[in-house]
Length: 347
Image (cartoon, rainbow, N blue to C red; front, side):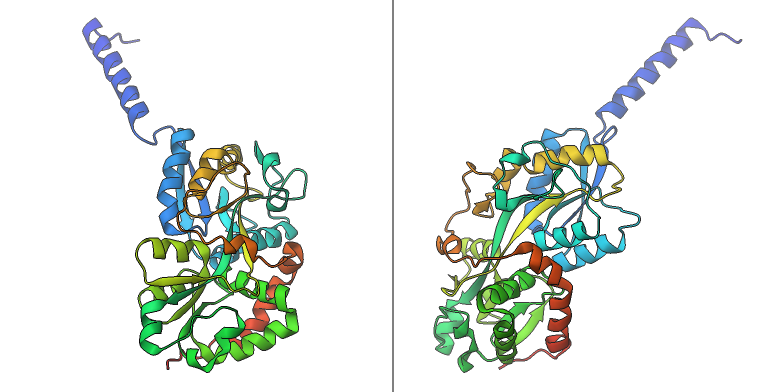
């Protein structure tokens, strides 16, 4: 065997050690990249990623974000060959649909037993764990309303008034979790047939059905429409940013949904995904959720979102999550048969 001169051998050793040190110091060099599917709002992603990666220094989060219906359809399409390591921030209606298809791994995250009973899976081990709740809301542009002489709506029935014709934006429930929770609330509060009758009449006043749940409130804040049917987080955020919005919580009851975390069965990196799921139901993550939502799954964590109307928690309708999840596909098919594909309307 050919021997290296002592100086050359020492130089080689130093070079190797330096290379190893550089690799260890390179961000992400020895970290596990987790692909995380989510329907969380865009402004939540960066702070959650930073908090999680600070707590779990060997994990690197790569978000795949879209509206609830799109993410749910993608997960179902990929169920034979999952690409997501974790689902973090998706409607419980979607979680229950995937649970029924056997798509979710049974895993009870550390600390999940402390979550509110109505905000976690009933199965043992759990198939999903709740994070927070989001609630249907009406975003009402006060400047445009004053200019057009529009009354402030107080109930869902008020939205049927002719004065609002062509001035309401609503999320499409086929793609938007907010759209689906809104009609789920109507069905639970009014009864299915009365809810369909209501939607038939409301359609005359709808200018556009949007892809996302945030868009109608964004539209209303910009003055494009007087009314946007949306959800609490978007409404409160835009008003806190100075948007000319009055947040209406209809007195006849509002629908709501839970955001949850789950591990797809067959996830590429299940061990690391379990650790991230543990973080997602812990107090650090809950404090992050509390910057945007007031209804949190973990008791004892005080939300920090300002100017959150107390009426939200007082006006929730009674929902049967599992029954609604079982009917989700049929509800969406019927909604699309009635309303999808029609042209946008203006005044």
